[in-house]
Image (cartoon, rainbow, N blue to C red):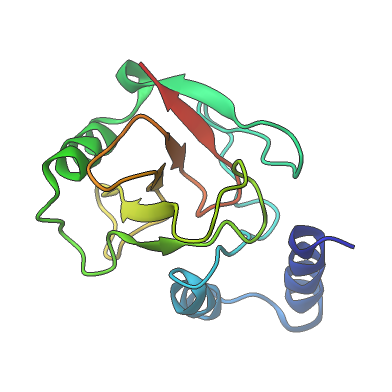
Length: 154
């Protein structure tokens, strides 16, 4: 059984047996954000026009820069400029443990926060870029905390 499926089963089982409080889920996600990606419980995956199937082994969908929210465009601008970034966690290593993105050596991907208007915390939106710092030609957008991705194209 692959890791993503195992993690999803654990999350679903936890929700069924003990209920799932927002504080518990947020704490678990924040704890694992820089070490690996967390899978959002069923029902939290985005259903908007940017939602994508992140099934292992399938290529992520795509989204143009013009289709991204304005906050994502600002994050891409900051990545190209090398910062400064609004959150200390921006630029941390993204391990791609669930292999939802193309396989590359450890250290290839880095994650950045995309601000969410009205959110009291970092929210669930991120951009993950691969390759040298300040390069934005191999970037992916997620609006559901790494559960699915869309490749950002020009």
